[in-house]
Image (tube, rainbow, N blue to C red):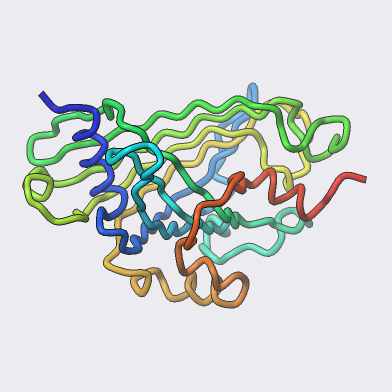
Length: 248
């Protein structure tokens, strides 16, 4: 029987690399809007990159890890796939999450046997006080509680997992249900967004599409690398918007 520590170690090889080397995931997809009594509509294309480094968390024992990451993602015109600067006359605020770190402790990672492949599933429901409370951000806040659902699936070849390499090739599926983004200025209007993306572990950051690498180099070049040290709290679209628009 696989122990929680062994299960986490397998996930760590899929999501990152046990030797501490930087690992880059890239993804692409689309963002759909939904509201009561309205049809789903594709409002944005979406592409992004996450650069991660796994380190052992010695304070919590040999089977605990810290995943140090930065992630950048960009909203695209749904037809041309160009990076948007404005949407309906509003400035687009892209995703610059620095850091986007995680602490991992041994747990029985949900896995599915797909024959030649293994799927690792992470289902993350979120509910916490919003960084953008309604009274301070009536136009940009959907309410005083932030609620979302993040659904990750990582796929790896069973033969690769049976080997000893610290990192194994992997593909990714990611779905997210969230409120309207703050910069969309929809306030408490019912509805929200559904993100539907897929991606893979790249051989290196150099495999990130050239347009994306150029945009990161021009705007925030540190996102080409994972953080060197642990820091908290994590950045989100909501906290980043608050930093751009501090309360009066």
